[in-house]
Image 1 (cartoon, rainbow, N blue to C red):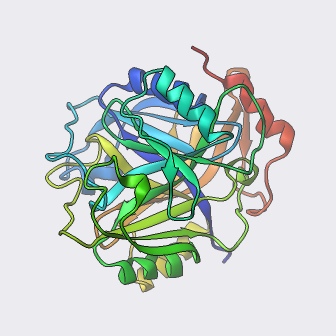
Image 2 (tube, helix red, strand yellow):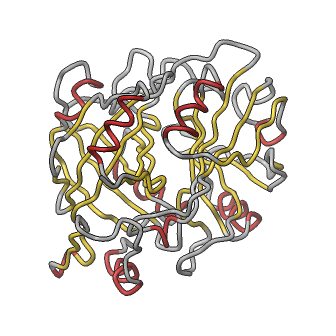
Amino acid sequence: MYKRINGLQHIGVAVSNMDHSLKYYRKFFGLDIPFFDSVQPAPLMDVYTRNKTIVKRASMIMNLQGGCAIEVIRPTSFEPVGPKHPVKMGDLGIFITQVKCRDINRSWEFCKNENAERVTAIQKDPDGRDTFYIEDPDGNVWQYLQGDSWYTRNNHHSGGVIGCTTGVSNMEKALKLYADVLGFDEIVYDKTGTFEDWNELRSGKEKYRRVLLTQKAQPGGGFARVTGKTYIELVQALDRKADFIFEDRIWGDTGFAHIGFDVKGMKALGEDLKKAGYPFTCDSNDALSMGTTKVHCTYIHDDDRTLIEMIEVYKVPIMEKWGIFLNVEKRDPLKPLPDFMLKALRFSRVRD
């Protein structure tokens, strides 16, 4: 049976104020194309919510200029809480999400002039690229990097998500999962030391090992032209024992909640993951409806409890208000959607 991890599809982020965060993400990251926005129980996540089914509002949003999406989550059945301690660089779990921009200086000026939270100075990342960081209203850290691959052009300074940074306790063990099993098998850099781009971030002046991964294979799936190449940075703190970001908290509490991969051939993929020692911890077993989007969802977690979602898409809205949807279940998994369908998504854009 055919099976493939096509690439990063989205990063999940749980917030305390849904409407305020959605507006913030539109303003600073251009994430203004919603695929769904619905309120539903989340029984699939019971294993990560102390075996109690929560109710949450979730909205999947993307930037049609390029990059992948984020899933914004806000529980409605309880009040989410933040981390017990401020999240430091290298803490276990996702602690940075990266977005791309056309001109790093333009994006920095925009963020400063529009009073984004905690804008750092422009510095060099471990690969020598100019970069800077901001925070969102819940204190989550976002990184801007200049991108060289774009799908469409509009007036927004930012593109969409290109990756995330997650803390690990054992780099070699983490590489066996992310590189060997999940297919992020190309090392962009592997560097140890202190890093100037983290100087203004919490515990950023300490010593770390940072490994940036991407896929040697071309991105696949219907949205590959939009998402483009994606990245995962693994970080191990070397000067201290890292804390688990979601210690004594549950999925739905604020923070970067999970990494989402677009996949094809879920059953066969599950067999491979089980053999590798990472069986599905929860499985929708069939098409799961989120508004008018239908997907098959499963989860695993890495050795440091970072949640990883696998999503096999069956049906997505193209122009929902006109009742136009696309059933992708039987499509060639490597064949991108036609340009006219992808570009039609602009008609669902939310404007402030």
